[in-house]
Length: 117
Image 1 (tube, rainbow, N blue to C red):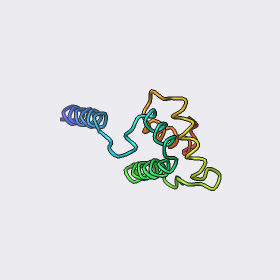
Image 2: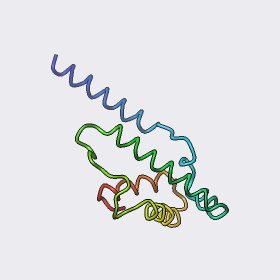
Image 3: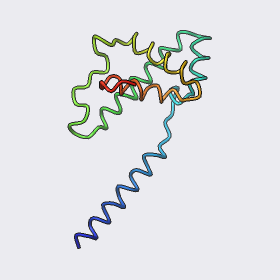
């Protein structure tokens, strides 16, 4: 019986992981870095929209995190304010033009957690 429960749990975990990999994000933040770079060059005010999407995406990650994970994480700390975060996203996308803007946001989240890039 224990083995059946273990196998069922393993199957459920495997299905959850497969589902997580197939999640499709939407919105302005689903853009490529190339598109982000072009849009903010053409209309610098567009960067606010991207930053707002990034903040919402990271806030969603905090809400979905299991208990004990990232509790107390400040998405706008005094030592890394939104202006510096916007600069981080710009720099990331300039260095990784083949990537997605969401990759830049993931890197920013890791940075805010203290994990660097």
